[in-house]
Length: 201
Image (cartoon, rainbow, N blue to C red; front, side):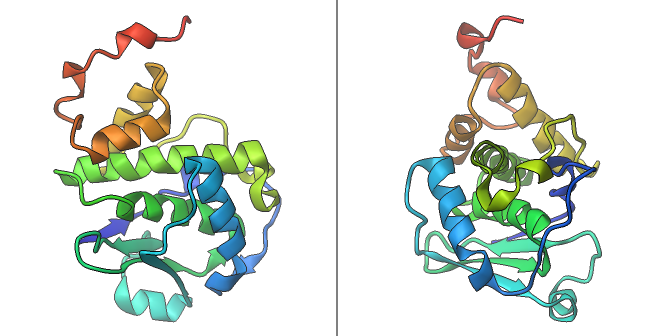
């Protein structure tokens, strides 16, 4: 199944940030992706997916919508998954790659909203690892403020769902696991009692 990713990098990036290198070759980010993955998950980067960076013209032949900066093809059940992103500056590129990896690490979630929530949960953890460990020197690029995703009934709902769970004290990677396992979703998360570990205000 293919996941279309609209502008999901903007919220995670500091509006006032230093310029970063323009990247059009996946080999240039391989080490950063491996490091970010290990610091996010405490595991080695799996080898069941590829990351491709396409030039603008090539990418737009596949994805015509301007807002789309990346997409993924989840073949968890039957072979190599793909993460495909448009050439971009390093900071935006790393954030988009993190979202796409969130889509293909596990099988598709039950609904499009849950699938986006799953990817956002991973992306939160990924951005936090980049910020805390200054991966690729990108700490200054990461936004620690409040952000708003695309208001399209999927990304905004998924995003606020993940934000709600994070504010209840859950770790973003834990949320990712619960959504990926089908234990919680947009429509049934309130059935799970999150109050026992709520952080004091």
